[in-house]
Image (cartoon, rainbow over all chains, first blue to last red; front, top):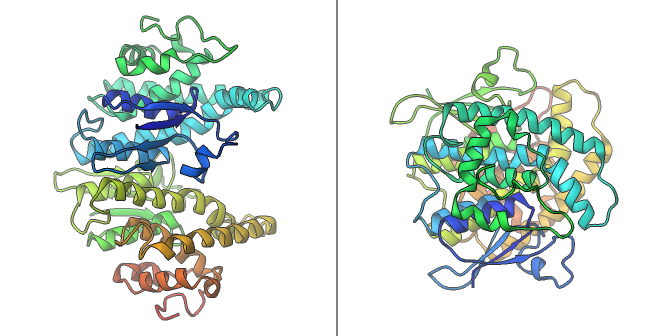
Length: 227
Length: 227
């Protein structure tokens, strides 16, 4: 069966889970912390020990290990073109890929790395208290990047243009992790909040909005589209 | 006219220059140091101030600024599918993208960042002597990663399989920068050397093999396919 090695509060894993759901591709989700691979299950399919990894059983037969995230996105679009998450012109596809990459690289490193991973992964690794300097940098970067998000959404219905694309999924994957820890100042960014309400109402978002971490409950608005 | 903002010893820029040459797409190459953009020419097309940036004039009209590198690669394959640098099955395309990404991310950061950029960019920025600790780390990583390259090329004719692809170009873009500074222990890795000799004999490689930096001549074997 199609299998995804993932972590619940990892934006890259969420991105792929949402893409799979949008495309109607069922997958067994196996939680895997890359730093805790004693059974070697992750190393055997991805020696680089990163998640997510998609184990696919394509219609042509066999089993394929696909990673890292960008490659999984392109592969799913390529192998399962139905319910396409890319626009139809090469210029619009370039913009979709640019915004997707911006969320996966710049936003992820500067905001999510300094906040969500600093708090959650440290706790999971039992590596003591978070570094408050990093949490502060992450919160500052979040406000700068929300400004850019608001700027894009003033000009467009969706993050890469007039069509819902994988760029919106990349954005929602990040925001949903931040929102689980109640870190997003939604009220200051009504355009971004309105976009995220639309995202939360999509059935494909339901599985990630159902995630719960032991001992860390999300805020009450977390899975409510009318927040 | 199609324009590429680039730097001569920047692997990502070289990757795009070689792809353009393989596809027979002429482009005016404008050298641009991201840290020295007083005229604002780079900021006006890419506020993120990274290179390369491709300014394309697609057949459909208008002018497009395309970046970052992964997006340029996908765009060129998408908009100009002739002389395709991708294999024909989605599984083989996934492997091509995985190897390409490995050279652009892991190899680039660990090897080229610690060696070529540490030496060349510091000099260009007049920021003093290179950090010898970093040069040493880069040289060590190069040997580990050459082992992985040799392992791949024992099983395959080209880096992503039996076909020449953009993964070979991503690899050659890195190795050609390292080789300009004579950093590659070719004799210890005959399989990789044999692959690089094949790469150097391709006409699309000629422009990057003609690059010369003021005051830093390359070794005599740099542009010789029979090295």
